[in-house]
Amino acid sequence: MWLGILLGAAGSIGIAIGELGMGRTSEEIKTNTHEGQSLISEKPANETLLAALNVKLFVYRAIFVVSAIANFVAFGFAPNPVLAPLEGLQFVSAFLWAVYYRKKTLFHEETKRIKKTTFCYALSGTVTTSVAIVGVVLFTPTIESTFGVEGLLCLWSRPEWVAVASTLSGVVVLLLVLGWASSFFSKPPTTMEKAEAKESVSVMLWSAFVPATVGAIGATLAKQISELLRVALSGGEDGLMEVFVDFEHSFGMVYTLGIATGFCFWYWFRELTNGMSKFEETLALPVYQGSYIVLTALLGGIFFDDFVNYNDVQLAGWMASLTLLVVGLAVIVVGAASSPSVPTSPSPDAQRGMMKQADRVEQTVKENVAHLAPTRPQQVPALIL
Image 1: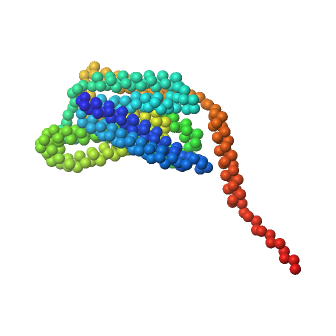
Image 2: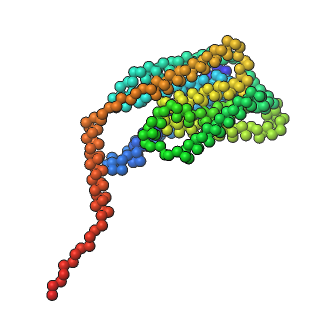
Image 3: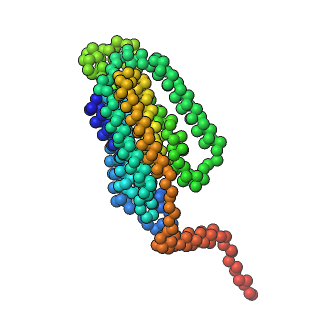
């Protein structure tokens, strides 16, 4: 189990670094291209800098992919109720990232001075989250349920899982329909509304629930694939026979699970990446990952019946630790969202730059108007005979 915990912890930290790095580098690339500059700007794009940024983006993507693979491998060595809370290490990574880059969630954008109240909230939430993760690991029993192919098939028909899966499926479909109807019948948001929604926790929760549920289902399916591979690899020829021969359509079941798992994780990571670019990343990461952690821990524990291995003290400690993790998440998000932004006036240099830019815009408009104005025909003087 400890190998799975190590892989899960390393994968979680790597995923956070990859996500945050990709978001930051993408913004830098956009800023340093003609696409991110004013059309009247005379500053050319720095091709050398853009090449370096593209290499940097590739490195962050590689870190993200390798870390995601490590997370998947971890499912074969530890149960979901302990692996899912390890994703809370991403909150710690996000906090350290925000401190290092002096993000506006913790520092004023113009002055770069620290927001004391927000910083205290973030630090308290990060410490609380770290304590909760340690508690989850300590209260998880070292005994893990193992299943054969027949046992895994029987898990799908357990009444507890059928009830939970049916309820979640109905909620997901309802939210998708409401989201589609809202986008179809509502007016397009204004620029100010988009800016407000970028740091709105309620909008983030609404956007995060469906992809987090799909991601949690993907984690449950990945754990089932790891169990099938464990049976096949640890049982030698008998194990291979049990997985791929003894049960009718078992070979197709493995591929079906693989495709379904790939789709779930693809959708989850795609929406997570979109959320990181749509919202403020140091706010979006705790909201998205927090939803994923709780749903994955509960769904995995219910599907594989992992909670039967806990005694009363361990179960109470695990639930208290998971609750503490949610509290830590809430402290981080509420502190960052409730911090008032201090309006700062532009510096004299910035004001002069804005005036020059306005003058260039006015001159460009005058030139375009003069160019589009119809020309009068030249008058030819009359020939006097």
